[in-house]
Length: 548
Image (cartoon, rainbow, N blue to C red; front, side):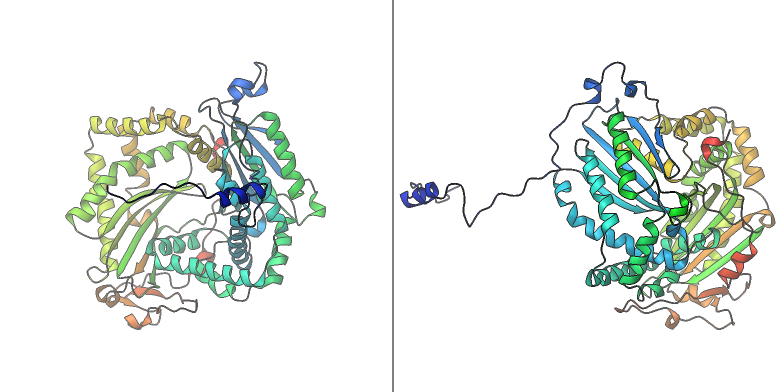
């Protein structure tokens, strides 16, 4: 390529200086050894004797160690046969689902721990080990994976950091800002905001980001230290070890977890009794249609979102399969009717909901706030459910029904393509307190039993019922558009204008929640807390594994 170059000998003076430095130089240094780099890659399949307990392991995770505060689940891998494993922990504490103040402290605590761990775990990431922290409704989930040889060392490092973390004031202030940004981003997204309002209405001990926001500014180092002490004094842990890990290594890891987190302490010496493995309580909606309408919290958001949620019944395997198949049958119809034919919005869709063991489904439409009113969008959603879906199910042919059933069976029968996918499914069962590791097998057996007539009878009984007999909650987030705002009034009957929408600010100031109603329909929830207090709770739902 006609690039100019030259070849010359290395100067003798350079060689002389190199010979005299004896491997040391002020300009160069060797990196410190990375203790997380795996050096052992032998597989259980090749190293375990025929009589080893691992070779008699069941198809699903099994309990190999259990106390009041620690349960260790274990499943060796003889399927993927890679020198890799996954170790996941679900750390439980009442503080993670307690008061509004505790939940806000938990958000800041979580963000701070992640920040400190990023520096501590740099070597582990370089050695192709990975970790993630996720908040669950009941605590914190620690997810790790990679080469199995040094994976336990990464888990130990994370737990030790959790125990010894110190809150530096400058970093703490930065983390408070990050949490405030997270809350703000949640407000910007209409779907997140809408879902937050629905769960605020339904779930016990549920608080919106709007309620948490004002508390962030007052959080200081002393509060965080007190919160950490309270959290660490009353922990319960569920540990899942899966992959190229031996039974003995799993037991030893369980003992290390107990030792680091000081789990064996009795309730009298701790902050309380072990965390109960009980699902979150869910409020039962009143019969009829309940509506909750809120003004968008972003002046730039010109989209309105209406989600009609239909609460059905506590979970049963049969109802779950019927509902899942119903959603699959109407999914394409939903897009074709509400978007293609009626042109209602940018995004339409439907989905099933399992809210802590209570089944339901939703239909949603996101539309231009300058084109459609929320009341009209809800009206078209209900016409779709009551007319289009009913007719679709009534005229569904046997051949089409069998095609959908066959498709549902194939998805559930498809083998896992990675260890990570299998581990995630198992850990989801643990975090939900369902422990139904054979859920897919049960669903496959149930799918093979259902008939078209059975589906039609089930939907007629539970879905296609008069509005006065439904348990429905419609949550509407009104976008910044003249058409949508024109039909709204405040609680005192005042008209709603664009000036009422909170403006963007750089100070992280709290944005007020403004509940609205329609001019022609005053049947809206105007006080969420008062509405919640009127509702009774469903009984605590059992683990799915215990259902017949």
